[in-house]
Length: 409
Image (cartoon, rainbow, N blue to C red; front, side, top):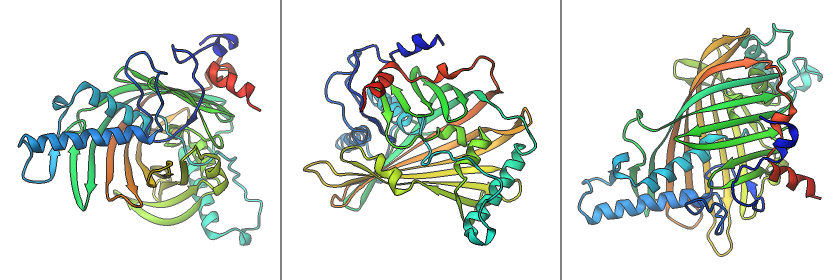
């Protein structure tokens, strides 16, 4: 990476700078093909999955007309039967949902010593505080006096858009989208940099498609080739990849104000379940035109035996009320298993995991709904703390984001 001045001149888009629109979590819009990325009207994020659903609905109808459908209502399509444009749409959908999602709340500074009398703290909060203390002890963070100033990590991923279910009038059609087996999918790798407080940068490349996102501690931004560079609305929030076992201290800070809501068994592990949720003020800041975030909740599952984080699950519900159209709801749920903890400089880091995301679309009036499932398997290959020479310049947003921030009132 170059100098500070060189970094500010950097443009992620080869085309002319377009007016910035807020970053949307979940599916991103699909723009025109070719190099003319900025041409035409950019659709909102829910349009991509709407196009994806319509594609499969058309495929199902064509199969019925050609008498290739089975006697049941389920129709399966493998990679060999899908056009390159459909495969590209599948990959864009998966990258939009699982590429670089954010946590629902900002990081707070976890304080191991409560300042309020124990009798004034709700039992749900005090229990969560104790569980996070055990988590930090289990990962080795409490015995290290040295504080890591920064971190570098590399890893590999395999992503697949598994299937969609389209419901209409009480009938459901299921279509396999990308592969009939988990062994197929799109493979890639990522590089992640992090520096305290709140600065991070990630580059993810899957099947030749590159997604870049980052934060300088104030502004979170993301770039996708078919969408351009966009800034996130609302409070500054951490990258989800960082808190799923990669940085225990960031995970502890995320759950600093958590509540212990129940106990639950995950596989063979009995777990304590901790909950954090975006408050109403933070949710209002993330409203974008007709799209309104209703709630965003994250659950952390901590093993009662080892004290380690073994599962994360978050749910993100958005209501879309476009002028002249019926109200539509989009619910995105991501569940991530976390494991293969290994010691790196005295700290236990999760080195493998699997995420399953479900995007559910339903309406208040329409009887049509759809459910799309996708998966990601990830592995950490290398982790290094306190990288020499890593400075603030590495986390400066692209020039169009910086220029927009400088000219905003």
